[in-house]
Length: 78
Length: 184
Image 1: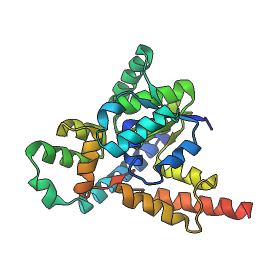
Image 2: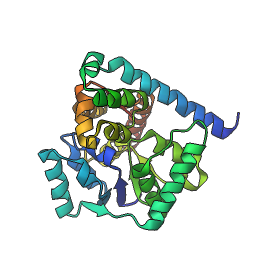
Image 3: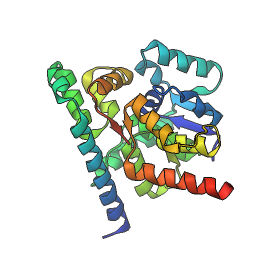
């Protein structure tokens, strides 16, 4: 395996671990109760951890979405 | 280490929730922030913190040139074409390009940005810090003092609902303790 492939693999594992933590700790009851756009954005955030794109999906500013993320108990794992 | 840093909006909004947020201004002379941040902040506490820091010159608005935008867009495309890596978006791509061109420290919590500096040769000299490294530097310099280093990181995690990867956090704490022992 090349050095680059090794690095990518290590980062992929870190990514998966971060996703698992977000999935495990998220308040799914809260997420499911949200209007469709916010629900989709929160689920996108759980899957990717990307605050910027998630806020665009939600139609919110990054700060507003960050507050929603905290209410949904989703940790920012970085 | 550069006296200057450029922070992406996601980093700053996360960081701004911490009650010890001002310590970052003892590490960097000026932190440049993209103009877009002003549209991304609504709460009184955070917007007044940013406005005060701008007034004091601790933060400075960064306006990207067309060359920087062009290079940032190329980086986005390249990140999306490389299998296995997390693509970057414009905010963090701009920070990475500025970090490369100006030698500024890049402050971001974006995993894609961390991948870029690890994998793309021309960005390998760009220094990227997350909150984890900023807090570690504050401890190293004695800006934050405590006998229990781990409590500071825990406090940040609780106040911002941030989670440091355990392996990275353990490594940082171990290194800080080793450095403290060497000094003693």
